[in-house]
Amino acid sequence: MKGYKRILLILLTLIYGCIDPIELDISEELRILVVEGYISTGPGPHRIKLSKSAKYGDVFTALIKSEVGADVWIRDNDGNVTILKEVSPGWYDTPVDWRAELNKSYTLNIITGAGTHYTSSPETVVPVAPIDSLILQFKKIPTADPAKFIPGVEVFARFQDPPDSRDFYIWRNNGTYIIETHPELFTIFNPLGGPGIPAPKDCCSICWINELNADFSIRILDDKNSNGTINTELAAFIPDNGLRFYSKYMAVIQQLSISSEAHAFFDLLKKQLSIDGDIFDPPPATIRGNMINLDRQEENVIGYFHASDVSIDTVFIERSVLDDFQNARKIKDDCRVLPGSTVFVPEFWQ
Image (cartoon, rainbow, N blue to C red; front, side, top):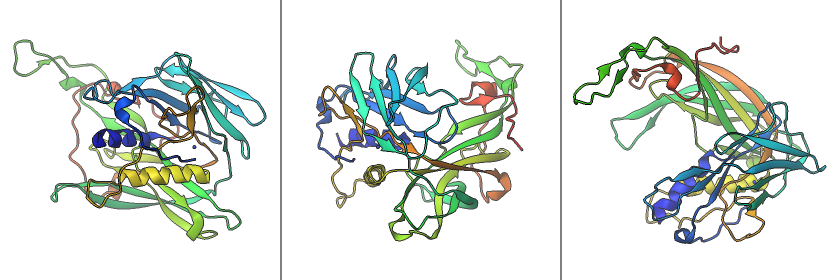
């Protein structure tokens, strides 16, 4: 039971809102709706992901099942409705040219294919301080094996916090990098056993990979103790996975405003994720976000929908910034099979 609860919490690290911790007998839950995503004042499309967690006790078979065929829309406080389109199973996008507006409130509405209506509490977009600069620092993260470390680069956001308001922040990161694979070494299954049968491919060896959230850590700030000061906060840690730093990595840092309720939610989630099984750990709590089932409000829904102002800055991380590396991964296939890949040079690539 405890392990399953931790898995549900880990699912929430992908989610980007009042907190209502409740005790929940997960063994009685059939499938729990998982809502991931947020909207911002930044460029669209803005994406909401819907899925259902598996029933406890099935050895996590089909742990996550996409929630397809839902009607999803966002309503602002003026009554304007924006309809999201399902672009792939369980993924729902706003129109590309749509974005949230400062000082407006938004609610997310979902009607599943089964006819169940979910809605969020209203979230108001408040201004966020702009990023002044990004600072890079190499770091090695220890692992359970004392002889092994995870090398990577910390990205710090430096900004002036406004003195006349209580502000709450959360950081997200995206990235782009170039890779080289070896399609000429591709093999197929050998029905007689032994090594695979050589089946070299003509294309392609060089691709650019676009990824979301190389760093899944929850990075938040309440300016209660730093109001009005110049802050330097860790916005992301980009680990070397044997692919990202073949050449260089372009990190895109999003500094987002969130409500006090959203901050409290993510703070509690972060604390729950830090539980490592020690006898002095607090008991795990099931965390409820700001999504409710209008027909059965006692139902647990995983996720917190929030609406944010955003400041975006980018930085190219050269391979030379790293003092140590993971062993390079050799992929014997067309680079286009990798998620987020393209053979076209991004127009922003330097």
